[in-house]
Image (cartoon, rainbow, N blue to C red; front, side, top):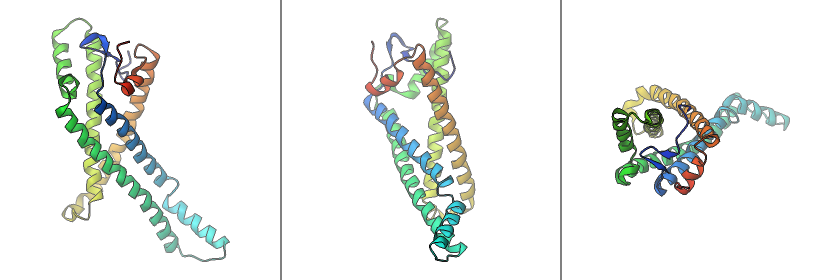
Length: 224
């Protein structure tokens, strides 16, 4: 069994599939949309609205139209275009921070069996006490640990992103802006890596004994 492959069956109730509450399913798909949108804005600003590329395009098009424009003027146009895309990225960041807060609140108020931290604790205790299906429990605990790292990355992304969004209000900390931006960008690459690993794991699960795991995240889980 691949280490990245999620398990559809409930480790604690072998005859049943995992259950996903409606709020958790909402968070999962909303988070998927927001993270995807945020990454698309980064991709656009690093390709389509790249400052040098846009500046050259503006100068060329205006020159062909008989107008003249300086490098600074063309750069200002490119900068304004890039800023408009980053504004959308910032709004995606606000929503992502809101969804993260929603997930933390959900962890407190949802049913005990659905609590992420409690499931990790129970898995660890079961790993220490049982000899049967030890590999299955160990695998599930590993998958949960990977998800825990993802949650930590989301927290770091949200905190650093909010810092950059409100940097004018955080003027006393301006000296660390570059470091914060570096951490924010590095975490983005780690999140992309997690997404690729997660998609690969789900793909493997759907092809093997975890078939139906995607529909479970849509309808909540079915014992059939």
